[in-house]
Length: 560
Image (cartoon, rainbow, N blue to C red; front, side):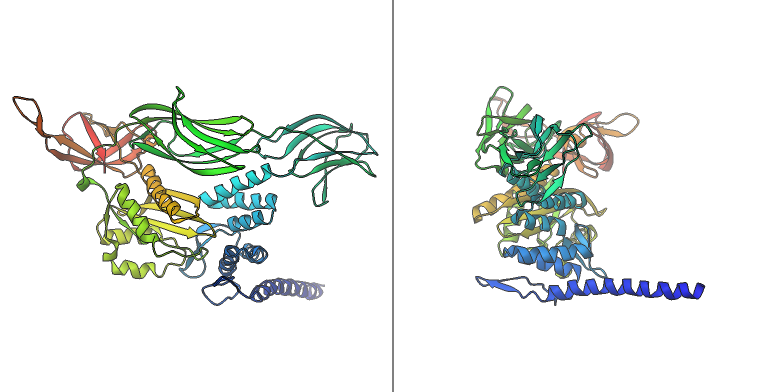
């Protein structure tokens, strides 16, 4: 009996293995049959290395197809990639110590949007956001919502074989273009939601005939048999939606203007985005058109406490407002020699993008220099670094490599960024690495549709600004008790991060004209001590001395 069981099981295992191998072989062979296509001198559907059916090659080729607008081929390759690898990551291992960037869920979502398959596109984009958040995924999610807002409204069929009584019909708050409906049907009647393509899904009906259902954009509610009369239910468009990204409640800002990124949508069509104060003073205003809008707003702020109202308005006159409470202070006087030194590594481009342009690196460096947050070192001085970067495939420099490069040039920080160009858009993910520890202390990303060179300059300026907002210049008061640890009256909400350094400055007497009282020369500023954030809380930071000892009980300090 034992022998027969073994003979019976072995063929099943063998058959299962053969089926699996056959399916993988079919995927691989099918992928290899797709010939690249050339349009206007640009070839799409290619990979850098010879195609061997690896998951990263399916991803690379799928994105290449997408750049050319070959949606069928792009979808096929991205799905093949996801059968072999199910997660999105900025740094995904291929083999050995080789890594690439992989956003298969996100890019498949982008392709499905182009094909009008919004429900599945939303699932893919949400999966990407859960696994590896990115500005582009957030943008795609807003685009899906905007497209839904413009879809045909759900309708209700009054069936001839049964009766539908609707009690309530309301717009779905989180899903523009959809309806929450509740009512009842005749006893024993079936109820279906019918999509525009004729496909139907059964809805749950209670024993007494009562039901509640969510109708997606373009669906109809149907019951009974025979010819039905379509009744369109007039539903007012949902209120506008608004997302604002930038300094939040309790934050201290030290710039003359603060940059906020916004995304807005409205079923009735957008008209305006504005930023106002409590008394109604307009600080910024942007005219909007269409169902969806996104961009950056520069908000000028005078020193003092501010309550900002971000308001988006639609064509029906309805609006939605997001409120931020923050404090504006003059930018602390920062001696250029005391600024933190930083090595800016060359921009990296992942294999799934259109590659860097010749002006990208110079423009990126120019905007960082113009922003003036760091004292930048000449990265061309490190030939060993350049050789290492040429070996990177992921478009993502790991923290250890960036830190080692910074240590060789004796800088405090290293700035590394990944730039990805699409068909008509651009995305940048920037990180600040603390060289001594190798820790990532700040990060920011930006995404925008790009139409011309002027927009590219604005985009790179925004990237530099967002890095400054993630790692701001701060000034505050240091308390030095007789016993215990030094405490800084600034914390996480004000922008302090772990290992951020501050200088305790002493200022000498001004040289004053005895007759007129005119200041002939300001007092000399000297560094009394340098301290570093050791533990950071919401509104307080515990500090440790790095060099020197603060003398007074209370000291004014400025960050590096």
